[in-house]
Length: 96
Image (cartoon, rainbow, N blue to C red; front, side):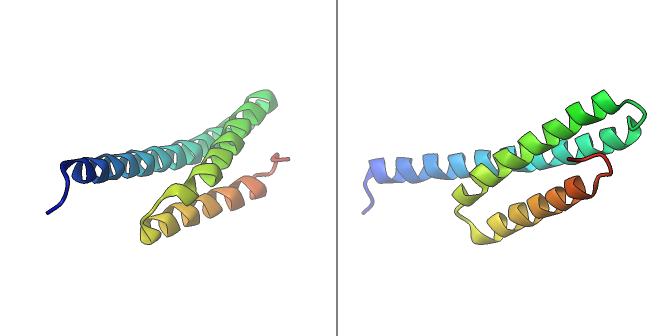
């Protein structure tokens, strides 16, 4: 029979994983929205650089935390979307 502490630990770990995945998914969605914003604001170079800086920060956060996702399929999805974000950022005309 399983110890109550072990069950509680697994429940907390599962909640932590769910929160991590939700956070990284939201970070990806927001970063892609930032790229769309940069496209709309092309006439304002300072704004574009600020928004692209936000995308770079999001990408750095994603790369830092994606390895902590335990489910390999979910990790692959997040990693793939982060790769797509990186390619989009690198191909943005004013990205440095």
